[in-house]
Length: 262
Image 1 (cartoon, rainbow, N blue to C red):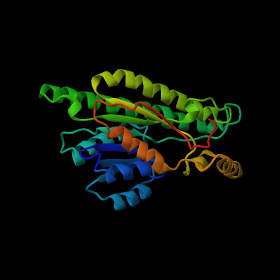
Image 2: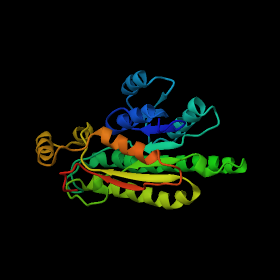
Image 3: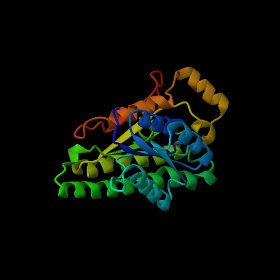
């Protein structure tokens, strides 16, 4: 029960990495707000996790009202109306096959909204609520080390290494990587850990939704596989967030062993 008394929020929790993270948070003793657009998927997951440990907030993770609702629900349902979410996973994202020259321009704005603006708004809200709680605790003589507080951001290896074949998607992840590191430098000295996880290829529905050709994807996975699975990323989130409050694993690049690039 490494995450007992932790109150989580996971965006993009209806499938893939987000679903795996939500499952592990509950398995390790935490509670979690599940967010995504697909209510039916979230309800199925809620049915498995149970209403004592999980709750659903359906909606666009880049919408400020939805974000506020997630945090309010975490505080009211799992924080006894007083304790804020203290383990926020910025996971929701959209992929897009192709470069700045070849990708579908009609998908650009939606991807940037989810990947960049949604991440920025979620980080901002988490930071403000956590900082206010740290100040309240300090006024009561409670040191910040008594309660770990984490913001975990899902980046990508293409946000560290330029890929000409997915440069529009990669550009949003370069931005997210920058946001995460900047937030770490700003919030770490105040007692909030901001961690960036940069996975390579992960088996999920992500690639299909992003428009990758099935034949190319199959050939790539055969060449570099076995590739990562969602549970590998979930285990990393648990490892990062279960450390004592004064210990921070800030930046983790993850690939299947045979993945050479990116």
